[in-house]
Length: 181
Image (cartoon, rainbow, N blue to C red; front, side, top):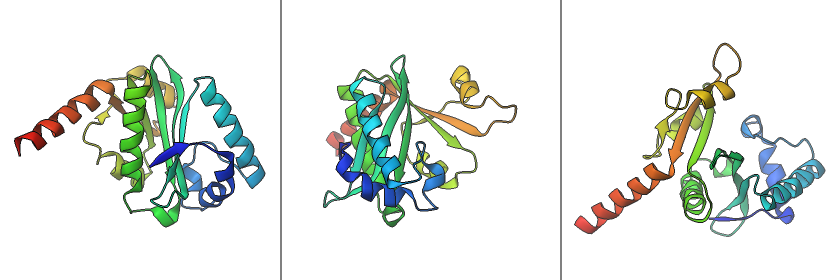
C-alpha cells in the first residue's frame, strides 16, 4: 500500500521518524518538522528529475506509516531505503510495501537491480532481508559496489541485491506453483 510522496504527510511521518528506534536507520534525517517538510519537497523534485523513486507507505486506512525509496539511481540500478514507524513494527507492512514497490520499480521503471546495504549491526534489517526469497548476497558478486559502500578498511555494511531477472523468475515459480495446485 503505497502512494506518491505528498508534503501533507510530512508532520505525521516526521513524528514517526523521530522515534529513537527508527531515527538511526533513516537515510535522510530531519531534526525538525520544517526540515522534514523541506526534505519531502526536495525528494519530490528529485523524483521528477529521475534521480530517485520515493513512495509513502500507508496502512489499510491510508494513514502514512513510513517511506520506501530507491536512491542513487545510475546504470539502471539504485539503493533501497525503507523505514516504518515503531507502532507498525512486526505487522507485515514492510513486506507488503516491498512487494508493491518491487512490482512498480521492475514493471514501470527502467531498473534492472536494487541494491540494499545493511549495517552489520542492524539485526532487525538483516532478519527482514533474509525473508525475501529472491534477494542475493552481493558482497562478492558486486565487488565495486561493495567497496563503494565500505570505503573504510573494516566493512560496516553487507550488500544484497535484487535483480529484475531473479524477481521475475521468482514470480514465475510462484505462479507455476499456484497453477499446479
